[in-house]
Image 1 (tube, rainbow, N blue to C red):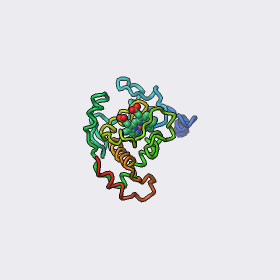
Image 2 (cartoon, protein in one colour):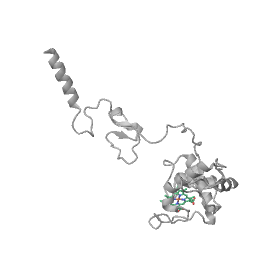
Image 3 (cartoon, helix red, strand yellow):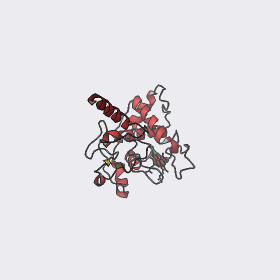
Image 4 (spheres, rainbow, N blue to C red):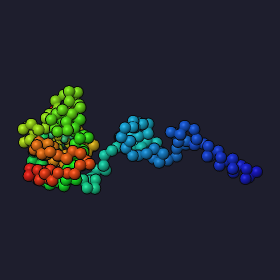
Length: 214
Ligand code: HEC
């Protein structure tokens, strides 16, 4: 009798978590049942997740995609501290690109990131003829003199905070990636044929072209 009821209890427990396999049964540790990872294209269920640190507690899991304050991702650059206003924009011209020279491998990676994140609007060659041109207003041709003479820091400022119809890239691209993409934009402006195909061998010309101007 004792044995039988033990088996019955085990079976009962085993089946209690069955049913719809997308929802676990009884959740006694919600932060294990529901992933804390950032599900990029998922709607965050506001009954479980909150981005408001004051609202956490009970079953609610506090989550935002920001790094812990005061920390820097390994291998990333120091935080950019100029404010998102007209004064910050002006001052940004004096901020130097920390990447003076880049290897051809880094440049190929920057090209890849440019084509993914920027090419849709600015076009593969920076000529404002990406697939979104005509759908998004005011896309600029990055090979025009105004952008050739624009400081790396100013570009970084605009990419970081966004400008009018261009959104912020601060959460999609690390600071390092943003600075390196700017170096790649310089190659589009210089008329140097960049290695856009990540399977292609990088042309050494790309390296020398990017070390000339900071
Ligand atoms: C949704 C389309 C879109 C995407 C994607 C986009 N941009 Fe832009 N970008 C714009 C528009 C529109 C402007 C003009 C903003 C203005 O001055 O009104 C602009 C302006 C700029 C400028 C000039 C900024 C300034 O201060 O005047 C730079 C540099 C630039 N983009 C680089 C990039 C880079 C690098 C990326 C990829 C990380 C990117 N953009 C992605 C639409 C886009």
